[in-house]
Each structure stands twice: as structure tokens, then as C-alpha cells.
Length: 116
Image (cartoon, rainbow, N blue to C red; front, side, top):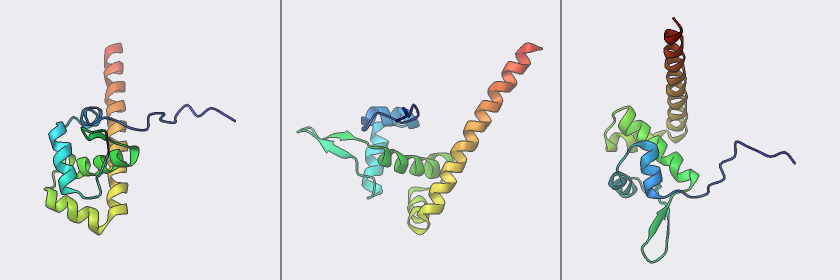
């Protein structure tokens, strides 16, 4: 059996880790949990510590794309997600890839400018 080096070995992320991934406040994530009923991280222990799985992070990525990147209001983001969940997911994924490509191209340009 071949070792899959791309597999993410971490099952759960803390609210702090997720907030840092998206450059958000922890309170924003808590608020989104109240506004988007399908965003429900697992809670453990007497202090109800939130643990976000990959599926939760994908939900946050979609909401973040609609609200923070594309500038939709929360009500509009809810409508978009409810009306066309698959289309919204695909658009968020494509946008994320395009941003990565842009960042890589900008890094290459800086390197080439440094050679001249």
C-alpha cells in the first residue's frame, strides 16, 4: 500500500486555528454558527469546546467566499447557498484556485524582477 503524503492527518481543528485560516475573529465564527444552521462543529467536554472537522471548514470556506471575498450580505449568502448549493461550492473552489494561481504568478514575477 502506498503512503498518501497529501492526506490531511488532522481530524479536528480548534476555533482559533480555523479563525487564523480565514483571518477572522473567533466571534465571527460563533456568529456564523447561529446564522447558518448547517454549520455545527462538534462540541466536547463540560466547557463545550468547538472542534471543526473538514466538512465544517468547507462550509466556512463557502460562507467566507460569499461574505468576505465577494461582499454579499449574510441574507444574500444564505439565499445563494440554499438556492444552488453545488454551484456556490464550485464557484468558491474555482475562485480559491484562481487566487492561488495569481499569488504564484506574482511570486514568479517578483523573482524574475530580482534577476534583472
